[in-house]
Image (cartoon, rainbow, N blue to C red; front, top):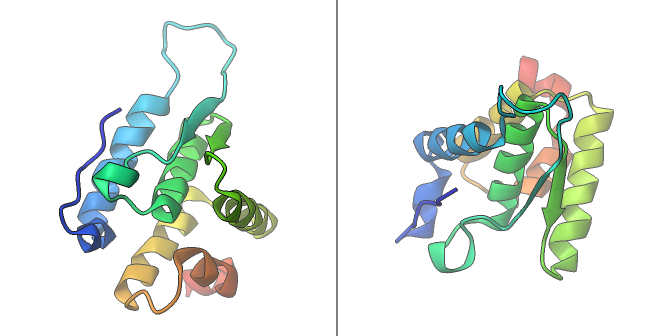
Length: 135
């Protein structure tokens, strides 16, 4: 799956870019209708980061959303980035405990972008109960 090259990293914090990346990931993750009944996990990592200037925290959430929508487990390899591994696990557990849906995660991104990114995406999610997204 190809990634967008962000000449200016700030461009990825636009919901049109998120929509494109989310649709691309979802389309890549949905099981083949010609495959077996067994649905394997998605092994992925910092897709579109590094040379493409993608935000690894944003890409992790986008891939989690796409895998969840596709009904596939996500196996995320962060390549020795212990901070990302630990923080993504904490956010995942928080979202699971809050019974967050893919739509809730989408609302997190919308609100995070609109409020001006005053804190990290993961901190924003952890500081914002899912119930507050519905009001």
